[in-house]
Amino acid sequence: MTRIVDAYCRLLDALVALMLALMVLLVFGNVVLRYGFNSGITISEEVSRWLFVWLTFLGAIVALKEHSHLGSDMLVSRLPLAGKKACLIIGQLLMLYITWLIFKGSLEQAMINYDVEAPVSGASVAIFYSAGVVFAVSTGLLLLREMWRALTGQLTEADLVMVKESEEAAELEALQAELARENAAALKPGSKP
Image (cartoon, rainbow, N blue to C red; front, side, top):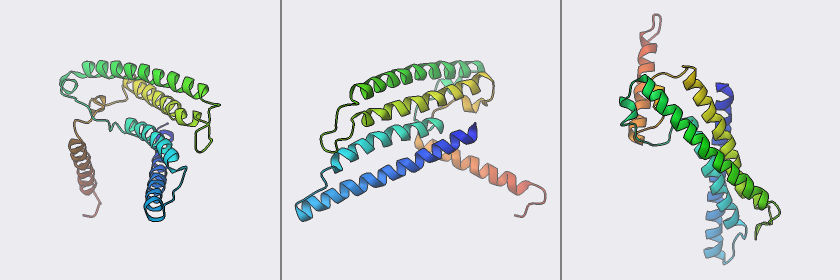
């Protein structure tokens, strides 16, 4: 299951990179054409706006999977194991409820706007709202997976705190973990320094 989730998130990472590159190309090309040649790409603004929305939602899925969202763990990190687990499960349930609201609203908007055409491209406006549906389904499954892991005891006590206090602290934590792995590998018998 972990391999499937990892592969899915790698696919999302690739899509996000592709969308970002396409956005830059469209916007930069449009600016150059507008100021340099007094013309432009008519569809550029609409498509780049849609890509930005999709990029944001897909990036949020990956951030949720990697526990990269910033938050405050000042209280939760000081609780005993049972308190950490209870706070995690309550938090997961609240996020599942919000995910359900996003799913319901996005699906309703996609169905309402299915026959509505975008002004420039003529594409269905439901494409725009579908980003929320994809986000909600993916996030809901990830949240259920994490809740299952918490309830079955598959998470360590450190894993029960699923937020990062700051980006710098997260980078420092990752660097320390990498150094610990390198040191452990160097201390194994038969390994070369």
